[in-house]
Image 1 (spheres, rainbow, N blue to C red):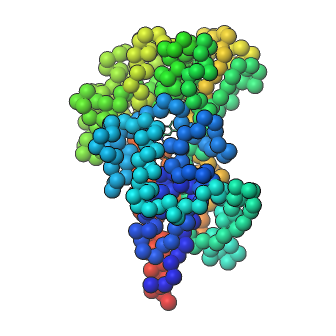
Image 2 (tube, rainbow, N blue to C red):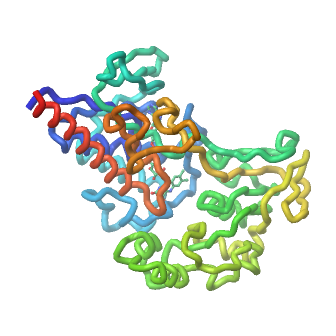
Image 3 (cartoon, helix red, strand yellow):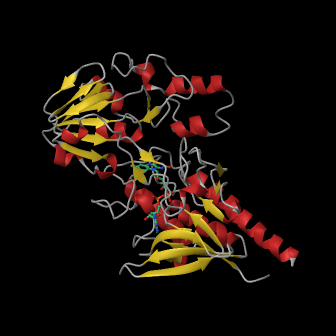
Length: 402
Ligand SMILES: Cc1cc2nc3c(=O)[nH]c(=O)nc-3n(C[C@H](O)[C@H](O)[C@H](O)COP(=O)(O)OP(=O)(O)OC[C@H]3O[C@@H](n4cnc5c(N)ncnc54)[C@H](O)[C@@H]3O)c2cc1C
């Protein structure tokens, strides 16, 4: 066998770790993983403040909304004694145990921030520009690159008329940690998807007046189905979803909308259970709404100094804080946008892995930079295996050609 090919892996979250392992399993690839933080685990490393450059972040009381069966590694299940849905400490421990068991940490260089990825002059190698913790710059060359920097990279806040004049606290959900700082306040959570629902629920019931602003309806679903299965096993495995009608029936069985009328809550969820509707996985949200601890509002029309006007003309005055659970923009800041987007702005990413506008797209892979319905980890693992196998095939082809 010829000399091993060097693979740069950027990011040591779950996607980076499975990529290191996939490379090691393809004899012929030598992975070097760059992580700008001093620990592995990515977003599951909780910190009270955002770290420099960090996109998404956890709040203190977070519990996974995907089950331990689905949100794990194919060859490394959670211990039996772990609950069905795990808190942030247990999830991080599981990631750390995985890295230790497969001896992955020795391939990671911590405190190294990759700031740019370019082809070298003859297009044969990738040139990575790297900044260490003392801000010292260096460049290194690699045969291939796997980018594992997360799909939740650039927080998005929509532009609203008057938002600049609003005097209260305004933060993106990635800065929310715990209810304490909002005690006694009137808070609007904007966005009713996963984070919005969970944050509104986390705030509710502790002397905080919580309003949730939702532009679209959403099905509020519990983590567990009434037949005792986690929702993601019921919904997102092929054996469970044999047909759209079965899926609809499953949703119907598990939906809070069946137990509590969305119309009653003003969540505009008049069409029940259509496939493809937005989902909010949140156990307590329906009860909080029913108890009046979360007040549902429509979309926001505009802000003024101390309050908000909603699309239906309703106003809320003396609003102390607005938390924008409004998602993230697609961004891979360390590579050239033109490798992903064509001139009209359409993304071309084969299998959501290989950017098609590159001259030789198979030499650079994006891992887990895709939105998934359900757990992210199996997607990361499968993408990393496909990418590593493709990289090895290029190597074998080159050897054959000699
Ligand atoms: C509140 C919250 C709850 C969630 N709940 C779930 C859940 O229940 N189930 C689920 O499947 N997913 C959940 N997720 C999604 C979560 O993103 C995935 O679980 C997963 O861990 C993502 O892994 P990743 O490796 O792709 O990204 P990350 O974990 O974000 O890791 C990316 C790593 O890359 C590093 N990095 C970034 N840029 C650079 C650079 N230029 N140079 C060097 N290093 C860099 C970062 O420091 C980080 O360590 C949740 C996310 C949040 C925010």
